[in-house]
Length: 282
Image (cartoon, rainbow, N blue to C red):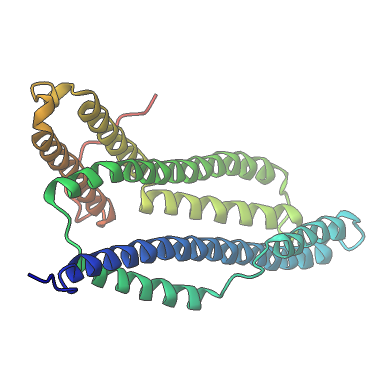
């Protein structure tokens, strides 16, 4: 019996699909990395531009109030020079624009979704991949927690320093005319009011606490399933599928709990259900 040359066509087609899926995944990661770099560059330049505008306005007021002072020109000029230097130093040579990168990323993600629809790994393989992805989830939670903690500490520092500065300047402001004391007093008071409003509305401390706690719990689950301790201690080596199933379920429960807390923090104070305040982290 002569064997048909088309007998291995399905296997060749499957191999070609897998290679295309692998290449598309790599290209998607590279494009996402380039998009993230572009966003960082744009954000840095936007911040530098905002600081430069505020610096020019503050310099104009300073020159008006103290025209004979050398520092009224030197300090704003130095700040403006630093902003321009940052904008120039940030290198975006050979990097596409934000709109082009976003469009390319969306096209690659759509292609990846279509390819994934034809490639369906087994349940055990999906659970193993999920276990490997947990490290990225933990890292993301920890990064967000550190970000919110830095913002909270910065706002608290501004409130404390501003309160002391307001009291000190107010003690020297003995006239009603427009002086540098009155201008500084108004600026610091406004900054304190804004910092207090942002800290109370966005709840940075609570977000940091809950994200860090969820990250610690997921990390504990990953350690337990790897070492076979805790709830996985009674499962033998040949029961890996049961351990992965239990691990996946427990991690998903932790993530769902984190999403529920996030929704509660996003609700207005009068609508949010009462929750216990987070304990102070050591």
